[in-house]
Image 1 (tube, rainbow, N blue to C red):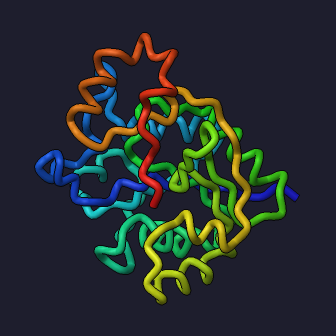
Image 2 (spheres, helix red, strand yellow):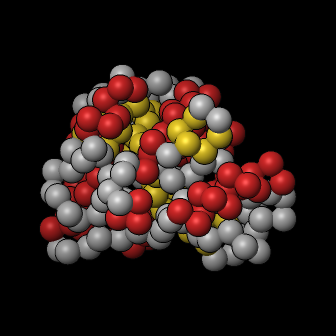
Image 3 (spheres, rainbow, N blue to C red):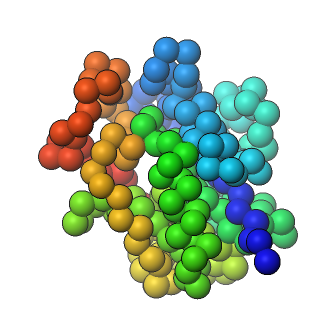
Length: 212
């Protein structure tokens, strides 16, 4: 029986380094914002049932997808994951999560994550690069894991990485590449815009995604 996988873009946060401007609207190639690249990547991986978790509803409603608010404000990305799992729990077997700060991510990487989830009995698969870099917000999570996420938040846990470890999550190894370059501050965006076409020896300099 085919399992239904939905997609969720995590676009929460205050973007304080950008003066609270919604980071997903930053242009990462001519005419394309980060969030548009994320949507394209999800669609390319054959995931069409998509939602966006964000406090910036007005900024993202133009893209035509449901905008979800955290059920618990101010608790970070894990609360966004809770909101999405709650939203999709009756319609999907799992949710592919994608943080809204990866300008180089593509359908290739997301398809690998989706396929890994479909091939395992674990409730979570997540991306890793190199030997030590986890990307816990780039993951596929079973909607059946909702209670575990809720319980983690109830006890004060804020880091998705710890919850995935508790759930015996499966790491999906990727080579270091521009796909997992993340934009946290203006300097990161400037570097991406000037070097994206020549990023091939990236691994020694790229910063790991936030390990929440």
